Length: 270
Image (cartoon, rainbow, N blue to C red; front, side, top):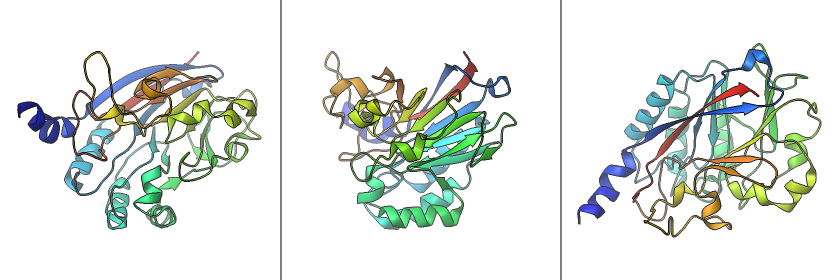
């Protein structure tokens, strides 16, 4: 009973700020120390209140990020939750900007086109199968020959991953971060064969399994590769993949041994 109460009422709301540095070849000296906050799998709905979403956003803002990257699944169980969470996300403060991609639940629970429209009307930029650039002067622009490319692909399960649209035509020496809700994109044959440079993939989707047991780890990860992409920094076939444990829950309103996560990633010149 104690473990069940902990998993239902305590751990799901006990989010953790994790901190990492990531060295990146070709990163301009002006972008050394760029602070990225990644938020994933908020899943605003019946199980996660709007006041809790506000706490997450307040905690994110307190980290003084340069860039906030959102890796999908903003709602759970109903399009009625789309507008409220979109309005809350407009409170995010980042000196360079806020961009994101959609996840599978955004399509099945929120209606992908509806979310796209709501986010656009609230001024939150989505880059599914598109990209933006952070210039050395730390401005977010549509085209650049130097700086950092932040690209995104559509959800692996519910949308299309158009790698040429996201990554094609980018200057060869420019470092690139790819946003993909589902980390299994890292293993997709089309992605591997494309030959596009990617220095780091940021993903979510797995929630760290939501429940992790001693020795065996997470019984369920929603990844075709089992424990490999459950959480944390993983070496994929092409590049490293960082898999956020996410913030919300699906299937069961429980977390045991998998605290919700706000990730702070600081980029460094390799």
